[in-house]
Amino acid sequence: MLDLQELHLAVNDTFKVLPAPGLLLLSNDGTQKNFITIGWLQFGNLWGKWTVNIFIRLSRYSFKILNNSEYFSLNVLDPQKYINQINLCAQTSGRNHDKIKETGLTTTENSETKIISIAEAQTVFECKILNKVMLDKANLSDELYEKFYSNEDFHQLITAEILNIRR
Image 1 (cartoon, rainbow, N blue to C red):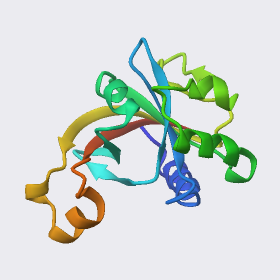
Image 2: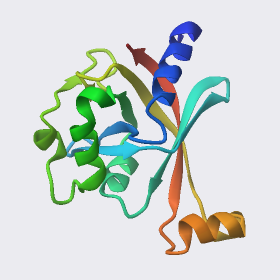
Image 3: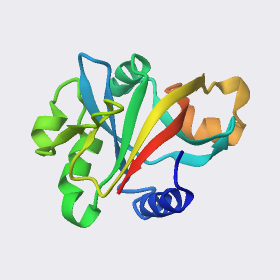
Image 4: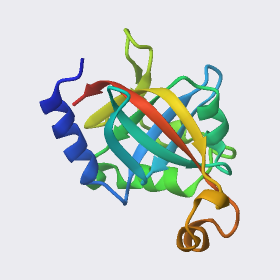
């Protein structure tokens, strides 16, 4: 059971880095690991669980890895100290770069949940995927479609339970 005070503090840490420079999502499908910068997310309570909704575009390299994963971590880094690493993850693709190696960040595994996160993160949300929904033109307002999806590169909305927080 999550401590609500800890959840409040962790969410507050997260809002300090949104929408930019963002936070790093670390996905791991058992064969591949990758960081992706996330700037669009929502926290809430759904189905009686504390949850986070993240949005990931189909064109992203991490999309495939995340869709073959049951878990992921959201990692809040101090942008004053790690802006170069955050920017590298935002500007390069894991298709062509080993972002974990190139950033020099250290991954660590929770011995209980086996979820991998970034050791240097000031706040980590360990998450279990509950639901995935594709956004599509038929269900978007014209305004949102024109502004964000006119190239047909839609997001998948992933709802995940927050299992654990490390601060």
